[in-house]
Image (tube, rainbow, N blue to C red; front, top):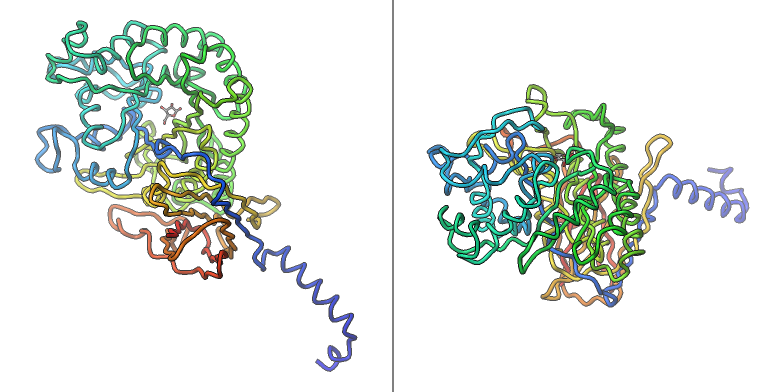
Length: 520
Ligand code: AHR
């Protein structure tokens, strides 16, 4: 102490500055800053970015959505679980993709219509060779979408089907009565008015389970199949690239006439290593970090695929759709490996939070996304076990973020601290902001840092508001999840860790947390 007093003022200043630098390098002082320019809004966040995906895989359809008309233990309407429908209505599910996935290119829709006792059974070759009795088919799916208030997105069979079969499916679901044998068939099956399905996928993963095609061949096939689909309200989606296969996008954009091509569909999963995916709950911080690296890669993928699309379509008429995304781990011990049933922890909430921010911020090109998959498969929002149902942390992120649906994106600049693990680093903070049709502004924030809270200063240029409130999703361990025994462990709570000073907000985000602020 005595010695310190003797040091000259200049020396003291140097020591102070040195300490300051060290503390900044160690992320002790807040460096996170967000600038939102509320006056410069231009693009709308399509509600379809909050879409889902349901495949005939494991217990997604059977046991998840559909428990059979004769089930007396689980409340249902025409066999559709009502607890699940109620929960999904709260998410405001805008669009639901079905029946696959890989299953789609083995699916012959005529097997799934008419009296159930006459429907043929097949083997589900992609997902465990289990018997598919076709008791859930086109009518059941489309009626369920009506119950849910979601738009259907049908994945057509290009890999093993024919152009005629797909053209007939369009007629069966969308053409006016008495215009073809297909519409007569619809009427015979008890459905009088058409469902008018807008969204159609032409094959799935044509580069893989959809036929192992070369992109040049698929582009030709797409042109052929797309030509014979006819309806007033048709949105045709090509099977797009896997991850960073930019050549695939280039050829689709170059070779398919754009009047036949409304969107190309990218697939990207947050998987650590396809050979060693790791457990869904019992994971290390390193595994968490790598998963987040994979999730954040979505930003680069979207940007690079969009840049290719910009070359051929500067007006952005053809959309980029990410119709499969999410975390993929080893299945829960003791479950069928082909059923892809995994638990869902705070790690999954982080994947959902950052990914949806990426899609929001790229909404001028990304017009739809479908989380894989809605119930009991991969990064599910709902898990079921007989009559029990669990809402996962991912469910709550989708629910908190649904305020962005159809809202105006507010341009945002994010400067973030690093989340450092060993020699690697990631940006700790992710954010997006929007203003809805009632003038209410929402800011969604994610702190992926597994250990440290983050102080964030948010500057709101051109925003008027009188009150702020917020909700937060967090927990005391990143491995935490909602189980059938303890379904309410993780739920959003009120968020109050912020202060306001004019147009400036100071927010403190706990480690691995997701927050949505509402300013009005
Ligand atoms: O979502 C599971 C599978 O992942 C889908 O069936 C397929 O399209 C993808 O490879």
